[in-house]
Image 1 (cartoon, rainbow, N blue to C red):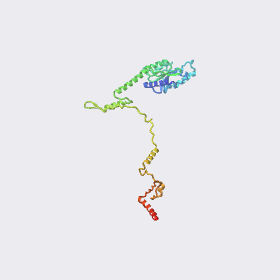
Image 2 (tube, rainbow, N blue to C red):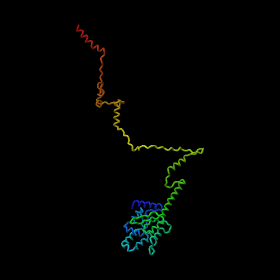
Image 3 (cartoon, rainbow, N blue to C red):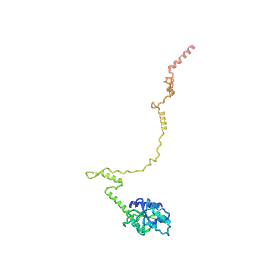
Length: 321
């Protein structure tokens, strides 16, 4: 089955279900000619009907239709074929039409008139679907509201579109639902299962907040100014985030600052090696290698210079004399 046609059949059965109350399993009346044609085309009748109607079915056959199979002409069908057709028909549910007392079975059209619409009211009270190869039967069923019809055409099972009478009923049902909804809205009520619109709720709340003044003027909360929207920026989730500095680079920067500025606290000052700490208290002459003091050389004064040169001069003078 083509996809487009299958979709149309599914929508059609949904319309029958909403308008006329069809439910699974669908009761399908099958006539004798339909059984003969599907057997000739090597088709599975039940599977084909379920595929066409898009749901489980309950095949049914009237007493007159099964008698038509018993009285088949032997020139067109062999006894083996007749037995197979009767055996297949016996697997279907028997629909009593109360015509078994007659000597000859009624035609399919007359039998279906008593089964589908016995009171000639033009309604399908028991919600039957009809699978028939008889054109007269399908023409009469179009006059009854709410009767799905299926037939086989060139080994393809086809479902007829909804008849005009059924379409009128469907439009009337939809129009009634629309009027009911408008009446409920006019009374200020809300239909069952319907959500109130946000604008209506805000309007009601605004009317409640408004208070009439002494002059008869109504004052309430100021109207909200409409926010002017500018050009939208980039999506923050799609923007690349800035890279964070590593902890190692931060430590290097701190060490460089300490070298430039010098130790600011006792904790930042360099510590003595562990070997020196373990040797004991330091002497006055013992300085750690990191803190060696520079020896200052004192320059001799003028008096010290004279004293250093005077003995030499006396010694030289005495010898000359």
